[in-house]
Length: 246
Length: 195
Image (cartoon, rainbow over all chains, first blue to last red; front, side, top):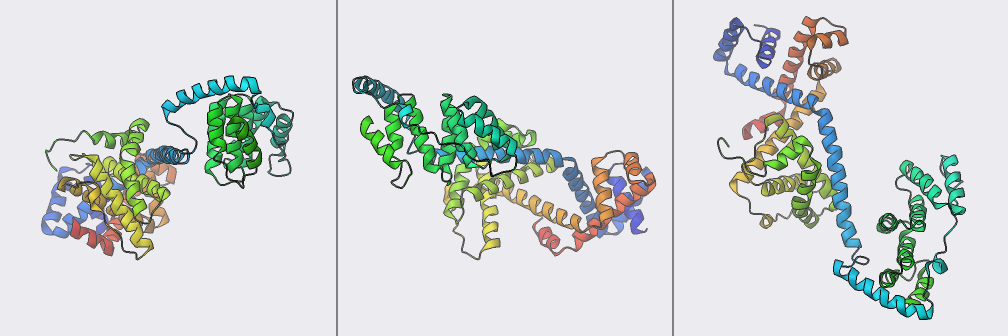
């Protein structure tokens, strides 16, 4: 029997298409030579392997993508937990903070409490000369600088989708959210920036603190302010604000 | 592993097969910390741990898909053992550093160790098969890919512009050639000794 004929028998064996004559021919081969038996087993193994590999390629890819996403979420949450030791309080503390805020609120009513608008020096957005999608950038700039934050949010989120790791876009995007009182979303953005190492690392903390000032959550605000290192750009003004809050 | 009862943790294997996001998330929540701890204690970091976990899960998926893996032991020790060994192999590949082995983290029973070994063997074989497949000629690779993805031979024949008889014959010859390649690979003989 030629190797060609042997492999044709193997193939028919794997796809269960052997006729009775072929079955006995194959059996004879195996009986005569143990090596053929081993070869048939390996052939069958490879047949299964190829079949599984080719038919589940798409499914495997989907699983890989999903695992990547689940893993990313799991691992980034873990590091948020760590990083947020400085910013996050235990749940019970929210109640305490709220009552302290009320006390402060009452206290400051007589004093003139510091307000968000006194401190929020929103920088101009000037990114036009960089990047490629000039049209969108121009629109984002115009909207942002003329304080149309809902518009600016739309354009910036578009720009971020094209350039996910651009912290400058993210930072200004955070401000548009904050200006629209979308606090949960802005906190998320600022936290993410703070975890990175861009020039906006501490700017993000400053604006996150201001977002609590805006909500009159003074305790939380000062807690955040105290985490600013001396070399942060907003350190001085943060100290002034802290004095007023304490 | 015959008639022993399937362990309730089989749900994690099924979650891999069904790409069930909720239960897959649970795998990370429950079983990742131990792996991360181990890898961080042994010259690794979190991002390496994430890769090792993902690769291990994919290996388990492949075995489940191809061989119908049925767990009769807890997932915990089995999974940890696989991740650990994968990491040790990575370390061995990249450095000659002594690897600290910390077995104390999970108690490893024979059953878990046996399952882990079987998965590792499956993975080694799988890698060897893929490596040998790459050594086939272009024509064989294309024909095999076509015959296994498009189930009807007539369609394959039409697509490749060949006769039905030719495609059939060629398929068996290509797998035959692959069989030869694997048989002659030194790695295959090492694996055979483990089988």
